Length: 167
Image (tube, rainbow, N blue to C red):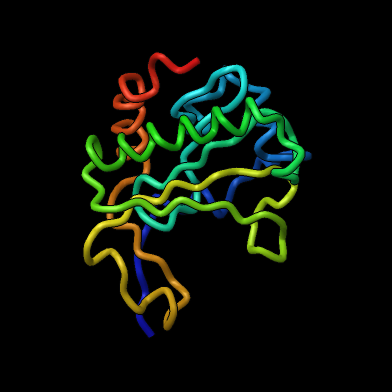
């Protein structure tokens, strides 16, 4: 059996402070904890946060402040803001972060694979040549080759330029 040593992940699996209620609403309601929660951007309709369990380095989510599990009931103004943020986020990942491609997606409902089904969110996953292998399928393991906090700091510093002039 092979073991991957990733000590920086220990805080995620041993978090002693569990959130009551919706984890995304907790982030939404606590802007003073943006750095702790790895928030890249926030405005009156949405916020962008790093995915704590990323598929690849730089994976983040665009989330409305409005708590809903229903895309069809989301106010159009909020949906349009999410898509504008997605457009700018793709630009940041490709031209600022160096991603060769980007996957964008939403899993609407538990049956569709949503890990947090009660609050919709849009994933942006940067992709790089050779970032896939069989370890996820065969070993049920993901390899995260860079430090999560360093990636957050890099994206946070870039986000100020890419998400300015939103409104």
